[in-house]
Amino acid sequence: MEKPKFYQLTKNERLATLVEQGILNQTDAEFLAAAQPLSDELAGNMIENQIGQYQIPLGVVQDLLVNQTLYQVPFAIEEPSVVAAANNAAKIGRINGGFVTESSTRKMTGEVVLVDLGDLKVAQDWVSCNNDLLFEVAQAAHPSIMKHGGGLRAITVAIIDQRFLKLTLQIDTQEAMGANIVNTICEAIAHAVQQQLGGTILLSVLTNAAFEAVVSASVTINPATLATSTLSGEVIATKIIAATDFAKVDVARAATHNKGIMNGIDAVIMATGNDWRAIEAGAHSYAARDGAYQPLTSWQWTAQRQLQGRIELPLPVGMVGGSIGILPTVQINQRLLNVQSARELAGIIAAIGLAQNLAALKALVSDGIQKGHMALQAKSLAIAAGANDRELTQLLPLLLTAPHLNTAIATALLAQLRAENK
Ligand code: NDP
Image (cartoon, rainbow, N blue to C red; front, side, top):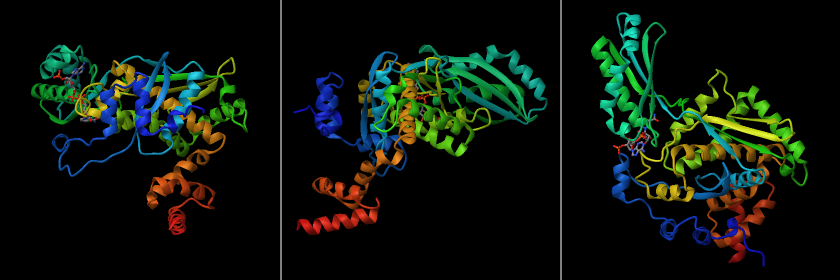
């Protein structure tokens, strides 16, 4: 008999396979199998007014090849079909030599804004001439980031709208995402500037438009590897390029194009304890950086008639800080991924974004999105209608051949099944 595929196994069998393959250790596998909630003490200390816990499933995308290393990527996501699609694209990527990532700088940016300053030009000159003093203030405000090899790297100053004095701080936050580090330094510098120049501090905080932490990933695909039973790879590749060109001129499409990318990115961001609101804000502000909202990926032909895809977006993720060191599942996910640095993690996440985009575009321009979703949608409807595991196997074939997929039909078919089974 043929060996069952990973997705055909039960959860415990999947965990046992990962242990056998040396990807997970036994203790981590047992922790995941037990699916323990957080202790009330921990959960209650993490947020205010805690009244419970909210669960979503954790899946894994297998063998994503990035910079010639294979990664097992944890996905925390509630939406069906995202993990399956990412696995599919990971396979296409693997056959084609994998994803290649690049990141130049990895700094966070902070903004300090003062108003009510008498002479803005004099204030601007003072900041420009007193960088040394402000660097000392930053160091005193957060000495520990200096010990980790980071800290303030640059200050620029500008007059905005003849009203605001804005200092832009570039801060190296090393292995942390760095919001707290940046905010601490920004506030200290704001007070130092105010002490010298007067005026009012309007705000001092990081910007989530982390354009100094941009990461890119690319993949080059032989179109033949995209072929389906009905369409040639050449046709699919041509349509993927055209669909992306369309997203460049149609904001309604660009939003959905990017949502598909964020399906994968957010799932890894969540699984690794990072701040998905920060990543979302950064991604969409980057997509609109030139004034018009654009797709985050591009697809084109190479001179050798290969399909080349590229993604570029800010990914200021952390390996430490925030809830990362607190949540046990996040620690397990870091071990599952086997990443050593925030930069490496950001590269994998960029590759996942590109893979997710490839899977969505391929489905969209070939069979349509719904075909692949039908079985999963039917399953969600059946579960929502109250079907148990045994009933699911009987109900799903009925639902998939029903004229429509909706709650009313799922409920009616389940009732009919129960009556017949009595
Ligand atoms: P933390 O302040 O929790 O963590 C950073 C700390 O980790 C450092 O100060 C340092 O402290 C420690 N650390 C240990 N090793 C390293 C290393 N190698 N490199 C860097 N730091 C190290 O979090 P962040 O500053 O990263 O902020 C992230 C949190 O802020 C997230 O929870 C986010 O949700 C939240 N946030 C986000 C905002 C936004 O996005 N707009 C706004 C405000 C908060 P030490 O040396 O003392 O151990």
